[in-house]
Image 1 (cartoon, rainbow, N blue to C red):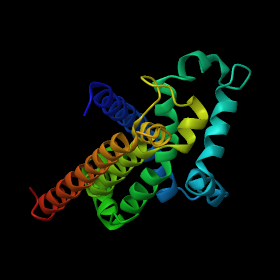
Image 2: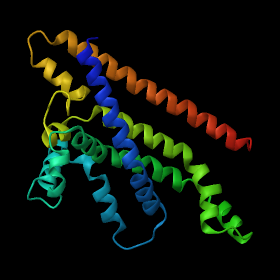
Image 3: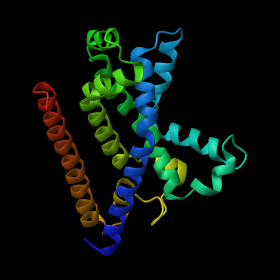
Image 4: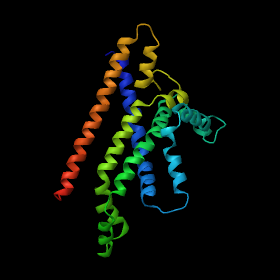
Length: 224
């Protein structure tokens, strides 16, 4: 691995971490709403949230580009995100959001509502019920969704290259660097190294998530 390649890895990790951490509160709030709210039109909101899963990533990137263009609705931020790593983080976060919401929503829906009802009959307020029952019981799903979002952020390509292009040192994350290497006649070795590293990072994240989730489930079962 060369110094430049390690720089690509560091940039990818930074983009993935920032995208995941910035998206996490929003993803949990949406997951909570979809799991518990009873309002008209929820199915339409659900379809919009999951839209990036089925729409071509290039379309998502183009929509972001229109939104953050100088004359777009978020044009005031165009100088801060276009062709910069922050823009890559936004694209990665948008693409990761549906996966995070889906995992968290399933986990929240799996929480036994009778436990929450029993706590309320004993005088616990909504916040205490959420903090002591709902959140701990749904935490394995929250964690799984967070790791899925991180892995998705690391692998984001189409929306990123459309939104903020492929700028070395700014927006060239691992997938874009692999793509650039494959365009060169002598880039096979670089592409192979970066691809192998991408797989290892994603695999390590998934294994760590599963181990932590199992430990949390065991702790909850035994009341630790």
